[in-house]
Image 1 (cartoon, rainbow, N blue to C red):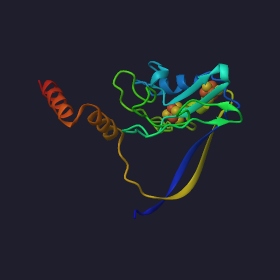
Image 2: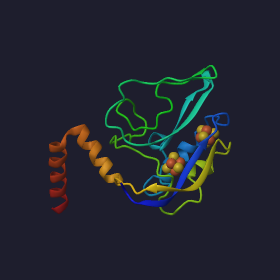
Image 3: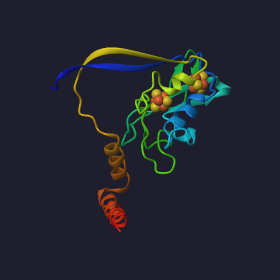
Image 4: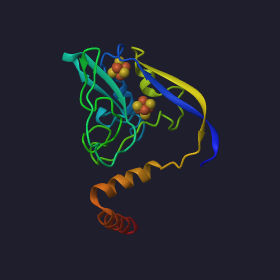
Amino acid sequence: MGEKKKKIIKSIKIDLDKCNGCRACEVACSAFHAAPKYSSNNPARSRIRVIHEPLRDVYVPVYAGEYAKAECLGRDKYVIDGKEYDECGFCRASCPSRDIFKEPDSALPLKCDMCEDDPPQEKPLCVQWCLNDALIYEEREEEVEEEVKLEDVEIGMESMIDKYGLETVMDTLARISATKKE
Ligand code: SF4
Ligand code: SF4
């Protein structure tokens, strides 16, 4: 059992009735996370994606969660108040079954970091830019068990190993490090 400690829990409440699918949140997120910041924007690498089906009046903002190595054995599909949502429509995983929540060029997993990056933001960028107030930011304090945290680079490496195999990744790293030393 780990130690207990106080932690600020950050959450974003999503009001589907207020989202009109404008996708300003995707633009703001991808621009904030570009390197250098705001140098480009590409919704394909946003850590929030809006499931957008105007004919069914479906607009569902979904935040990138954890990297999933394998697909689930079955898929869910929801019908709520007579409205049919897409298969896996509420799932946050960066998963082999789909393209969202992956870097478009490298397929490295993307995860929402609540904009904790430098400089620290008072509110996440997507919340600031949602002019319809569909995204509502909340903080509260909770006692939690200290967890072992995988750094982003470890998660990225793990996904590369899952995709290409340990040997290929090690060979590639050895080749790159040799050229860097030249
Ligand atoms: S900015 Fe707000 S209203 Fe626009 S798509 Fe995102 S969540 Fe929906
Ligand atoms: S909280 Fe920040 S990182 Fe997460 S989706 Fe919103 S803008 Fe992107």
